[in-house]
Amino acid sequence: MLKELDKKELLILEMINEASQPIGSWNIANRLAEDQIETSSATIGRILNKLENMGYLKKEKFRGRVITDEGQHAILLNKQLKNMTNHQNKLLKYIDPRILEDFLVVLEARRTVERGTARLAALRATKEEITHMDRILTIQEVKHKEQQWITDDDLDFHKTIAKASGNGILEVMYNQLSIFGQQSRAFELLRKTINAEYMVSHRRIYDAICMKDPEEAEKAMLAHIDSLMADVDKYWEKYFKK
Image (spheres, rainbow, N blue to C red):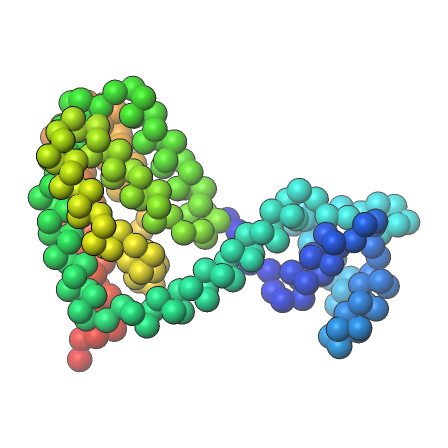
C-alpha cells in the first residue's frame, strides 16, 4: 500500500533525488531556508530517519543520504496521487442525480448482455484469453494497492470476457455499452467515495471462467453488476436523498 508523504517529506525526498551526490541534513536545512521554509534540525532529522526506515533513502557513512529505487518510485506515486486527488475534486462536481440515473440505465443493459458473455466465456475462452484476464487483474490489483486509477483495467477485463464469449453480437453490444461512460473515472470515484469493495467480484468471475463453469460465471457476473447498481443507490441515499 502506498504511504502518502506530507509536503515536507516529499520535498526532502525530491531534493535528495535531484542531488548529484549524497546530501546531509545541514545542506537540506539551508536549501529549505532558501525557499523560506522554516524547519528545525530536529524535524529534518526525524524526516530523514522516517524516509530511511521506509526504504526510500540509504545512508552513506559520513557523507549523507542518497535515494533508493523505492524512493524514486515513491516520488512518482505521490505525484500521481496528488494529480488524482485534484482530478477527483473536479469529477465530484459532475456526479449529480442525472449522472446517477444514466449509470443505472447502462448497468441494467450491461447486466443483460454480460451474463451471457460470462456464461459463454466459461465455455469458450482460450488459454491465451484466460492468461490475459489474469494478467489484467494482477495489474489492476497492484494499481489498487498503490491508489492509482483502475478504470482502464476494468474495461480491458470486461472486453476480454466479451471477446472470449465467441459471440460477435454480444461482443459488439458490450463494446457499444462501454462507450457510454459508466465504466469511467467518475464511476470509480463514486465507488471510492462510499468505500465500495474492489477486486473480489472480478476474481470470482475469473475463477469461474477458469473452472469452465458457465452457471457460476453467470452468477458471479450478475452479482458483480448488482453490486455496482447497489453502489449507485448507496451514493444516492448518502448524498442526494432528502
